[in-house]
Length: 318
Image (cartoon, rainbow, N blue to C red; front, top):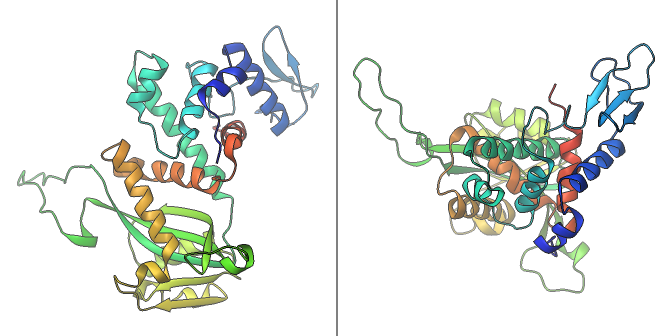
């Protein structure tokens, strides 16, 4: 996969004006929606650098950033564009501290919240897709950095639990649609019977059947065929999808039966630990959004930044 390198980025977006013009173009392509009357018909006021509603009874003006991920941001268009490039130019993540250094920005907080907003955008973009066909489902447990709670009466820290029930673990439902390899790679050798298609990772509060069912309903089509382990929380899945195939999965054959969800869990954990060293439970979903967004667009090459730009302009914040 060839992604846009920094030299190509500088050729496309050499300064603030080029970024502003590009952002205007993406907004026009995706339609500017009037905050006051909901109209999509606007014209550009070059002197004011704003869109004005064509509705004669409205005439409401919309700034270039308003209604998008950049709304109320004091950071420049060039800083936003460079951040989107650096976030999508590699499979690895980039920390807010490193971005602050690259942007030469004095303060950490604006850069941190800009990156979190972009991760929210990634998640919102992917939330509209529904998984279908043959799919794998399992849970992952991601370590977070939040401190243990302290009892307000005894002033003692709660005791740390071990294993899946640990307070230092964020529970994540990992869902992956796959395709039969023989249908795609007829002339090639392949390691597994299936190849990966689309990935979703959702933070869940608990592993109760009710919680799992709710996530499955919103993520899979009823015609999907689910492969899972024999977790008791999955007992109702047979009523939610066309075909549910539970397997008695041991540590030895888990990778063979559910190869792609395990690869996704392993790779996402490695990505987080390699760059961030630890992630707060509060922001865990955002980091998973970024991993899934780039994973699902692994074949887009240089266009992955363009996909993020489109997601940024269509996301409304009002």
